[in-house]
Length: 177
Picture 1 (tube, helix red, strand yellow):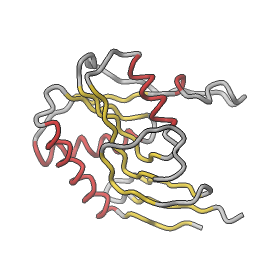
Picture 2 (tube, one colour; picture 1 turned 60 degrees about the horizontal axis):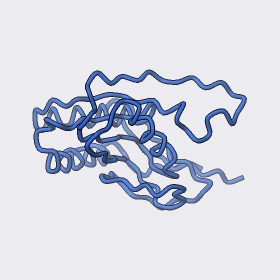
Picture 3 (tube, rainbow, N blue to C red; picture 1 turned 90 degrees about the horizontal axis):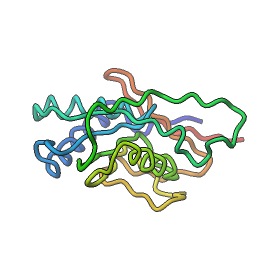
Picture 4 (cartoon, helix red, strand yellow; picture 1 turned 30 degrees about the horizontal axis):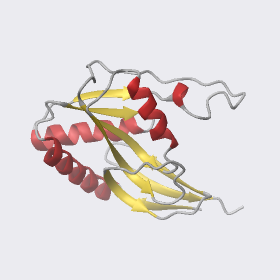
């Protein structure tokens, strides 16, 4: 079973709100950078980057971060791991870093991202933006600083964010088996 919980108009409104919150807390972004988590956080990161540019004409340091080799389930499967490209062309030392991911559930991906960030330097602070916060079933004590939408979902549910130009949708998919 599959049901839509957010459609493009709602996602666009959420992006506008998140952009305003980020500007309120980071002003001109002179000492702030956005780091989107590969692979699914990058689409949200690009959307936020565009929103900051269109609403406030702010240029932001933006990069993408892969956490493949920092995950706690690394080498627990026979399936080959294929890392994504890391693209950080700025110094993160002493910067305020904003991590971006589409869905926060157990918190394990963000924990891996915190480890990965430290490979590139020591930021002044790290904040977290998520489009969807699945409030229950957290395995590590991580909470987002900026949230698009908080949802209650069952353990066997899957939240999927489909990014298409002017057609972003967020689904909850339930396995009824």
